[in-house]
Image 1 (tube, rainbow, N blue to C red):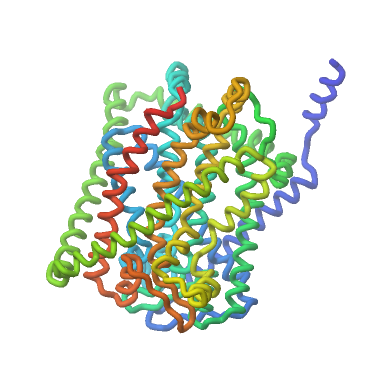
Image 2 (cartoon, one colour):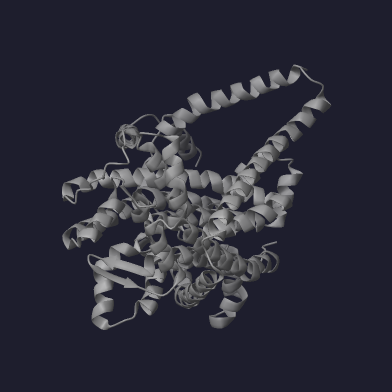
Length: 583
């Protein structure tokens, strides 16, 4: 036994560079070159007076796909930073929570097209004569389709961390930064990755609208899969539409294999349980990367020495009494707060100016009768959103629990679920519009299906994340007590997944309001189907550039969503936090 251990230790010591490291190194440099190659096209000259031409030649698809992916990942990176900052602030500060949560409710309800009508001109003014302004507007639109689900999910994960772990972190005197890195982020990792996958799909859902911008009588198209598909829709080109769909499927599958599947395999070590799970997620890429010595070498030769040098420098600087200890502590405490207060006051000032301008634009142009008509259209859309949420919950909750309970099934089902979640509804128009016309299905009912195709997956992914996060020791206890059927669901499964379901259902409902803009006004070639609802109305007035009605319709949509969140989802969040908290 001793000789075996010695041999293993010697093998570990002799570990060195191999062909695996060469492959990984080429992959890293290839990724950097790809980013620079596609990013170069984002800063070219742009003249808004000239019309942009998007070719439907299939040989342009790889370049368009690369440009779209770059926008998606930039938006995702911004969403991740926003999630950590805002979710953390909301979870740790009551005043911030009272401001952030209602703000997120409002922001997730404002339509992407509404954002575009406001932000395109602003970003173009920041970067005059450059395509970067339009690129920023497109990235911002994708960001608004990704970030809300991630922020809500991360906040919920932080407020449901078991109290004994919080107490342990306090007893070990961990700083806030240490708690964030060693407790809070690892505890939320499963939920964060699954919500990130869903949010990334939410970005795909609006990619066509973010790349083919038609607002304020301006028609601007950026090179990308979304604009390629929009051009195919305008021309009624079925061949180009099929190629766009195939390209998108390939990109989604590649993202699953090269990003999400390795992350799931890596995050399994953060699962909180006393009994090790039998079947952990697997990834061929994750297993391959773990064989590389390159990352260990960087950690030993670069990261650790730099970290030690930084700690030593910090200690040396700490001995220099530039200011007495008490004033230094006071400055460290109050300077960030003062800067935050100044920034907050500036934002409030800008919001007040925007509200005054909006009221001035609406007051003299929108009558009471028009406003009441908008409320009626909002009620119709709200009915579709509510019906979609109920049906999706009844359908996908048992399926999500079943997928999570079968790791082998999850490995197969997860990519297909991600494809379905990431699939933009407008790519189905060649088939759906024709089916609705042939089957004589009213778009007033058919739009519910289109809304569900883009938003029901928030519920599925959150249910899967919740079911997979159930500790194995609790599952073993349920088996020991012989819990089966409804008893198992009532005492273990439903309480465990309920907080996750609340996050998924709340985000699905908020996303459904956004999706209604696409789903209630379906166009393919010369065929247009229009449902009676607030989403179709917003799409129409946005294309016309009718600013007063754009502001009014968006305000009505925000009003409906905020009231629903205040009266329903916020109470369910509080109930989940108090009733189903793992202690």
